[in-house]
Length: 300
Image 1 (cartoon, rainbow, N blue to C red):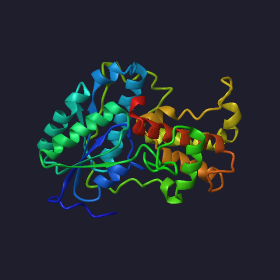
Image 2 (cartoon, rainbow, N blue to C red):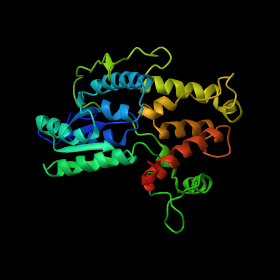
Image 3 (spheres, one colour):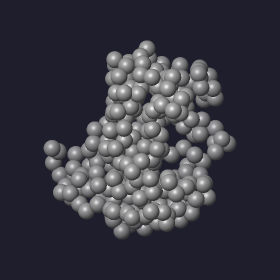
């Protein structure tokens, strides 16, 4: 086990968003490199509702936050819940928390839609004005936007050529998931939410258990028993032919790298030429969508 960080070293605040996991989380790994780490999550219920976020998603998000808090607590990292009704309220809310904690640095994983990018730009400006460093990682895409471009250095707008170039650009170590960071101290109390945005977290709890442990169990089960027939069975509602992982990927309890790594292992250590090819195509499409969203802002 790594030694405890120097209590007088840097204090880093990691801002969780759609990356609610401790394994394969580039921003968390960067935060834990030196000094003390504190985590936060910002609840922007008014903004979410204006984008038609429904009760079921809020309930699943709340359960996922509880699961994340439990995993962070084991690492000695407390999770602070911050209320900022709309994105415009986020910079001030985060600055207030950062000042109260004596934070030197803020880290987070990028989000690519236009409203989120504008919010993050405002956060950067607010933090810079208060001498707080900001670092951004890419935990939501295997190959970040801008890395897969045409020979003319322009972004792709059609999937098939994007996929071919994506496979050419990908290096084997880029789908090797990052480990969970070492604990930074003794366990701390975990957050326990009962509701989120006025919605009980019990909604569909039996059908959709939350957290990265539940996500990994579902991933393992899919790869072992469903992935081989995914290309055919996914089109038949009467059979269990899909992964049922979309909700976990959406809140980031599971990463695309973890999925790709599991699929490649199932394919005998390769990304092409195996039973899981059709599902791997869907994971590449997930990257493509993020590239389109980031590089063609009008899509948002």
